[in-house]
Length: 481
Image (cartoon, rainbow, N blue to C red; front, side, top):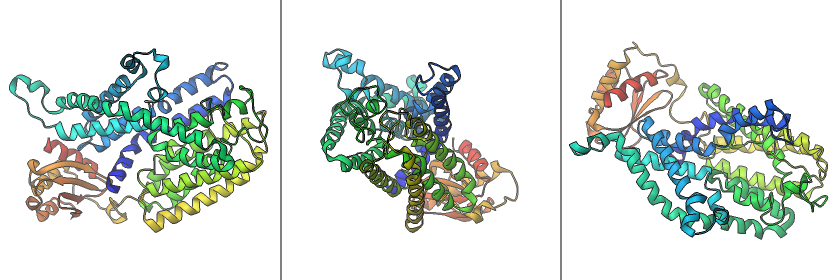
């Protein structure tokens, strides 16, 4: 299970790397025109819409990333299958089709079916697509159907399997959604403790995109709280010292806590991977601080190190609860980042928002220390700490650059193309899955110029090549095909 989660987390790194720039663009645009969201300023409009291309379509990006990363050879057909699966779910479980099934107007469709566009569905569609690709990409057909053989058969099966998956989702999804709304309504009377529970659940539900169900209870009008609307005075009924309690505690987490976590992950990354880790971690940390968009950073470690994400959710709950009990109130219209913190000073129900800065600095240190200790003690595989290679492997120099000849000899040593079931590579290793382990000749593989061979399981073979492994892997995939 842990291996699956780590592979899933690695698959998400490609789309996650795209998200920080989207969040920052939206944040700048919102800062320029916080009241009109681009209606009053053309530059703000362009920035907000440009950033929204990525942020608003995060679930689709996740579907693509998971499909490519979890498929056997990262071939583009799996990405096409993911889009097909995504469109199938959005159509079959969308308000339009559900309204026809129920025989009601689209406006009367249960709220759950208006929230089907989320990260969980994106990841699910990616897994369906990858599973279909891995199972059917070599399917043979009779001559009169040969056009649909092989990779062309993958989209066909993806549609059919996704349609089957929509049947249980049609019944299960509303139950899950309504249960979360019920949970939110049940903790309303718990005051600051309830706010803490909400903060914990809010983060814990991010991986499946169901935090929106809880948010609708506390931030909007589902249960009459409407914490955001009342805080900014757009909805009547705000109470000084109470309104804003479900928002204020997120500022120290998003502006300081997660950047502290990013610094801890950077400091614990392997020396040869610090530059790579810094690229995603620090851009995502800036996005979190400036705009309050946290997903680029959270998805960078939630599947790679689930224990860290649970700790993050607990710390969020603790922070939201404590600040709700203090005379501190701040709110947001976009998210709990620096931009909204500055704008909070003008809100009618703001109360001592300046105190969020010293509290945030303490939270930064707390996150840094807790994340660093957990990463080191539990040997968690956060960005830059993967087991795939080590410093020595990064210094390997091949005797020549005839990657085709090297790949051919490795393929011969592995038992030929018929013995290969999966091809992948990390920074320094060619990672293979084989049918028959007895056909693998390690001496022949090493004779190709490879630095070593590792066999972590009966069907897994890792060939240590060095930083030029990508070129060998490309040639190897050509030969296997």
